[in-house]
Image 1: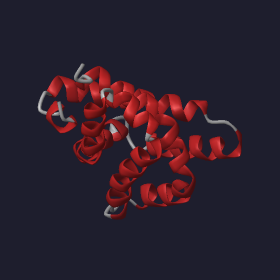
Image 2: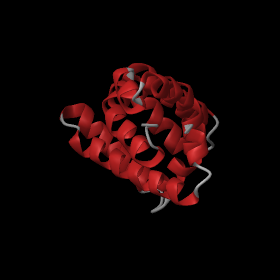
Image 3: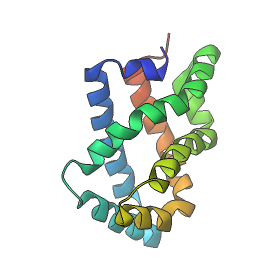
Image 4: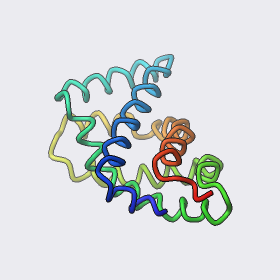
Length: 147
């Protein structure tokens, strides 16, 4: 199944949002050092915007992100395991995800979010790549791997 088709089921979409939010929380909590401190501070600022801001942001970004990942997911289905395929191609997966957030942030009117994102953008690709195996597993659990 294509990733975008999974969003047609509201229960799958809601579960994806919650699981992605949990993954982000885990990734941020695991960061250490000065870069981790900066990331945790920025994440705290963004979480402070409102109790549903992050889950709402994930929900709004999910359709674009699924569409961006669909070609890789389909390639992975053709090679036998899309979860492994995304993980093995984590750089390309991260680039596709970041292209969505870059576009969205550029159009944002929230200067706090734009400023915070721009401060971390240069170093965030490594963090996104580190999260790809967890994201791929979440997608496999909710969408299926065709096998």
